[in-house]
Amino acid sequence: MTLREAPRKRRRLRLSRKMQRRVLPWIVTILLFVLWELVVRAFDIEPFILPAPSAIFASGWQWRGPILDNAWQTFLTTAVGFAIAVVFGLLAGVAIGSSTMVYDGFYPALIGFNTIPKVAVIPILVIWFGIGTVPAIITAFLLSFFPILVNVATGIATVEPELRDVLRALGATRWQVIQKVGLPRSMPYFFASLKVAITVAFVGSIVAETVASNKGIGNLMLVASSRFEVPLAFAGLLVTSMMGIGMYLVAEIVERRMTGWATRGTDAAITPQG
Amino acid sequence: MNFVELERVSLRYGEDGDGTLALDGATLSVGSGEFVAVVGPSGCGKSTLMKVVTGLWPPTAGSVMVSGREVSEPLSIVGMAFQNPTLLPWRTTLDNVMLPLEIVEPHCRKLRREQEAYRAKARDLLALVGLIGFEDRFPWQLSGGMQQRASLCRALIHDPALLLLDEPFAALDMFTREELWLALQDLWLARRPTVILVTHDLREAVFLADRVLVMSSRPGRIIAERAVELRRPRALADTYAPYAVGLVHELREQIGAERGSGTERGSSAMRGART
Image (tube, rainbow over all chains, first blue to last red; front, side, top):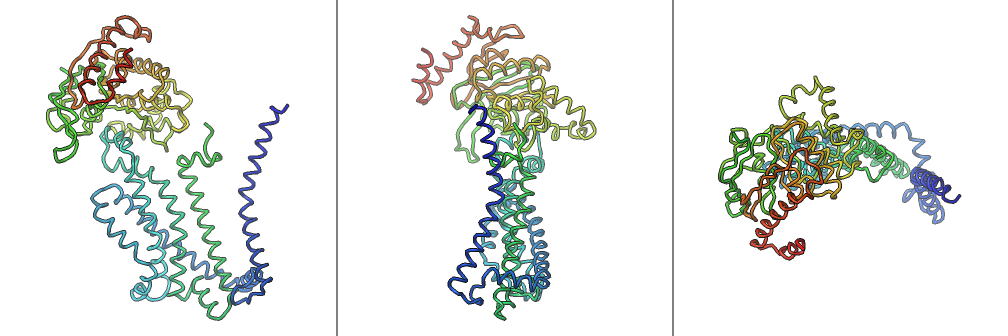
């Protein structure tokens, strides 16, 4: 009796755990907002210092037209910069990861390049391209390029010598080794880096919009705060983080689809039963 | 005419001549269609010998001839299996077995047009080693023995004239190992490639090989050889018959002597194994 019941019980438990994973993030988010609201009301905080979530949502709804317009602008800017970063990051990553010569020559320069605070480059970009969308795209690109490159290069450079020997023993060319082993092996690294890259791409475009643009969420927030429309500035923040989460989720879904073989232990749902 | 001919081959690792000397004047020859096993104390350069024969490492001195030609780069007529199965984790068993076809000519060109025929061929090979029904599994869904079988199939798919096996069964338990000896014997009898098997298992060497070569401790040379006069197909019980047991003991004595002469601290372990 008890023996027969045991598996069923376990199954129910696992199902509920799956539901938990779905529902918990929402509960936590809502609780945070409620707590925020309570704190603001309890301590009677001025709206231009910290507006309550209710005020933020109200303001967001009131200004939904401009918010959507600017969010769309920011999204496009980020997407274009990110796309360029993916292409160049992949190409440069393959080149650097597969050749020790290129690696030795370029890596120090790349490290130096990466240590430059990208925000400091924006004024120079403005001199070159003027105020507007282009500096924002380039900033998004500059920020998201490096993580992609480093990850792809690492994935290719750390191919097990045994795997390489399997192909080399067959007379495979360098390019065939990269194609058959290096690239597939670096895919988990690549997709992991996309999740980092997409978030920093948002940071890049929004910072550039704040400093050097007349469009986009960054610009909207700047204008809003200069007019003491603090709830609106916060609404801009919320929209940004929602876009960021959305893009992150897309990157994660793509990752799972493409590299299920690398995450076999963590998610039983996507691995075929063994 | 011997199929594989090594003439006083030496290999020193490292570029500036002060690396480890792994091989020192190794000379051996293997006839076409012959099955040869190479045994020796651990670290004697057995694996290095394989890398030299495949052309993965150019020798520092001496000459390596395969099929009448000097080896200067990896050869596509060679199939190789390693101690680790080294299957690509993102490919299914079938796709792993078919990997060499994507690289070796003329299969490489014909693969797309004759995909079905090649798939059938890969399935036949998998059936020979008892892996039918596992074609679409990923390597991590197979046991170690099954992975090693798939790796053997991969080494054989492009009909290599020379099969190099670098301790392919070393990581397996004894029952799985014996099963695979039989599978390998069947494969060899069916296709008759030239085989060089590196192993430290003397029973394995005696069961599988026509001839057993003994290597010295590092730097490696061939110091002795024994022909195995057992009829094919051999049965596992043959390895417990007096003839095979005698041969295994004789080989063990030789390797033990080699080990003793080296600086290995394992001489006491060797004595333990003998009792």
